[in-house]
Amino acid sequence: MTLIFSNIDSELEKAAILLREGKLVAFGTETVYGLGADATNAQAVQRIYQAKGRPNYNPLIIHFAEIEDVFKHVQKTELAFQLANHFWPGPLTLILQKRAESPVCSIATAGLSTMAVRIPAVTEARKIIALSQKPIAAPSANPSGKVSPSTAQHVIEGLNGKIDAIIDSGPCKVGVESTILDISGAVPCLLRPGGLSIEDLRPYCGKIESHSPINNATIRSPGQLSSHYAPSLPIRLNCHEVFDDEALLAFGRSSLQAKLSRNLSFSGDLNEAAQNLFATLRFLDSEGRRIGLKRIAVMPIPDTGIGLAICDRLQRAAAPRPL
Ligand code: AMP
Ligand code: MG
Image 1 (cartoon, rainbow, N blue to C red):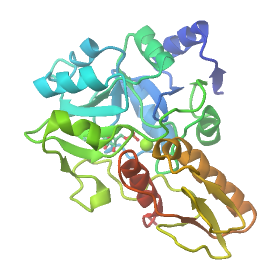
Image 2 (image 1 turned 135 degrees about the horizontal axis):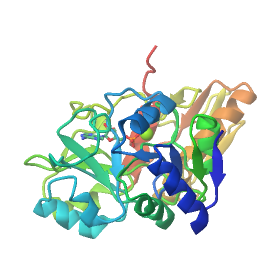
Image 3 (image 1 turned 90 degrees about the vertical axis):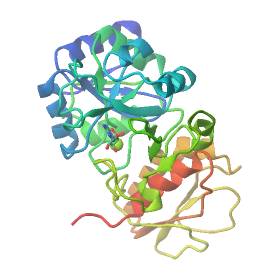
Image 4 (image 1 turned 90 degrees about the horizontal axis):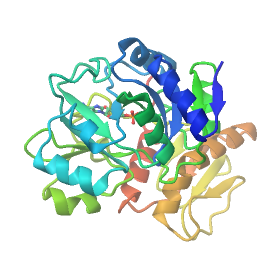
């Protein structure tokens, strides 16, 4: 049975106890809902992979409450320290060399010598991490490959009965996953565009390489699966027209007409579009199927700022599915 907690302190304390006992607890962050487990407990981490149906070669992001806790587990470089101070808590994940003495279990990092680390911005998320006194492994709280969850209800739809508890902290404010920046090597490398824009990172990093699948570059991280974030209905991108059997995912001013349509942001605001993205995809998918539509047509969306993350998610939602 999955317990549903509100975000009051006494419930957060109960959630922290569950985490310490090796249980799985989903909680809201500013990006998407995460599925948390004690990262030092191999059995608990194994249960994350099982509950999500996630391949075990796809490593997890480890979440912390405080910057000094992070650097007990990964090497502290000058750039890491600067980025941590400017952007944490927030939607930035850093890949750094794992310290030999870190008790984070190797299945959480898929056996890599590096570790993905982040401090989330939602106060309640940081509170339960701090109360648990553990590093918390937390991938998105949805079945692997499917659309990410931006509300507690989305988590229930995907994982009810498979996890121990959910803390409902309302809808996620950013709405897309964190930006993943690998700074474990000589040149910083973008592995996933996300809630923090590359334009914001550039002043600190200078040159940033990109290994995001959106550029068809070499896949460098084991989790960069091309088909991901996938609704049941196929997706058609960059549409300037809509066919009779299609639902429409619009952005900005649009004169396109469809039997079923939703606009990510009438005013063309990319932050609003990111916030609405996953809930809107879920709605068009379930309602579209219910009324017999065959596809979701998506209008062009600019790939600047957080738009790059939106385009990445939509391209992967549109990618050919594994058989
Ligand atoms: P999710 O937990 O679903 O947000 O996905 C986490 C992403 O972080 C996946 O794409 C992983 O491949 C990536 N990741 C986690 N740890 C590492 C690492 N040590 N090196 C490179 N990528 C990583
Ligand atoms: Mg995910």
